[in-house]
Image 1 (spheres, rainbow, N blue to C red):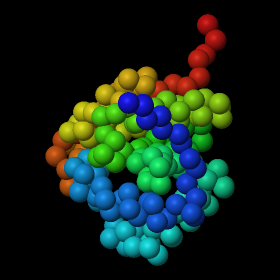
Image 2: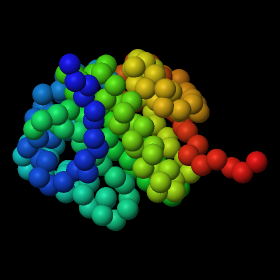
Image 3: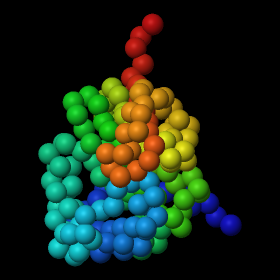
Length: 173
């Protein structure tokens, strides 16, 4: 049995159909952990608009957006949103590939890219009701920076929002 090794591929306009399959096929699963996508985004036109916006943000240096393929299917996404020397990281993995190390591999690749690009800090957040995501981030070197008690309620979820961060640069001793 071969091990699946995810590779981050920058999102492009050619990924619209595969992204629609990914989001539609995993919508109920994702809704356990994050707010549902707007219905408009789940249309051909809406997804094309969303992808165009992400591609423009990538071109102008406001972020970087990636997909992971297994064959012709997208099985994961990773977003990096830039704010000065900080980057906020978010991801989602298809139910079919959950628990197989895909998220950990993606996060590690993203952190390496951020270090190479000179970012100082990476941030992320997850609901306390999503301990698997928190474990992935902690395994990749993130630490809890704060907890918003009952913060999930603002998004229709029970639980706290756990904010995590990682310093990407090492200060000289």
